[in-house]
Image 1 (spheres, rainbow, N blue to C red):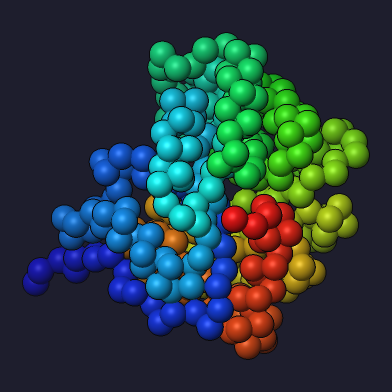
Image 2 (image 1 turned 30 degrees about the horizontal axis):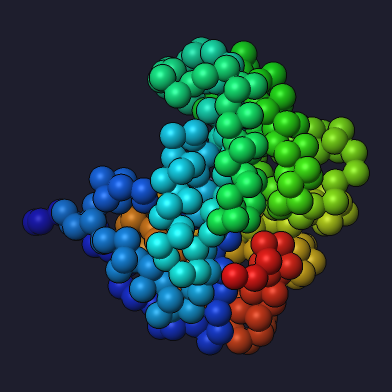
Length: 302
Ligand SMILES: [Zn+2]
């Protein structure tokens, strides 16, 4: 019997409203597009599919120095696309020279762009002044992909990103991988934060959702909220005040059900939006309106 071949997800029924994919990674070069059944869906097609489905706006994150200029350039060629820039926590560790094998068994490699962390932060600060940039992200802590030796660099970089975001008046997108308590500790230590703070691809439970809500932070839900095993994410969504909930793809990863295992793109996010509406027990048009008004409050209009 032939092996089941994955294809790109079919176009979902258009949403009864418009929403923003507040965190995705658009491919800068075609080679970055994953293939399904030998086919890489061109970016133009991905974006028109998103618009046809009701995904009106996208925030695309570049979190390695060499990608900043190219991502800004890409965003300026597509209506509805804006940019988030940061040094990813795993990049922060590399800028600081940490190449210890990580808990997930990989050995990180430094490359020529891994200049000292302070120089990288200075380059980021400059890049943030571009008008296409609407957020600082993703920054935070990753205890899965970086060894303990890299944690200090991650915390130092995270704190510097908080300062930069405050200074520039930009919202902050946080990457929190197996580091819930420490992420909150770094944020709490920063004191009075007067910019929107978004936990991108929220991975905590209802208790952690309360911790965020208490501080007025946002939780952004991606495809994993649709996975059968993730009851804790559905409980967290329900525990979160609706005005603090955002939706994202984190594409090309984390494709929602019923297309798990296929490549992800913003147009596929309609499935996550519908799932959130069901959990809220809210009609689709009101679900979209709530999510879009939350996104606009955080990132502004364009
Ligand atoms: Zn991401």
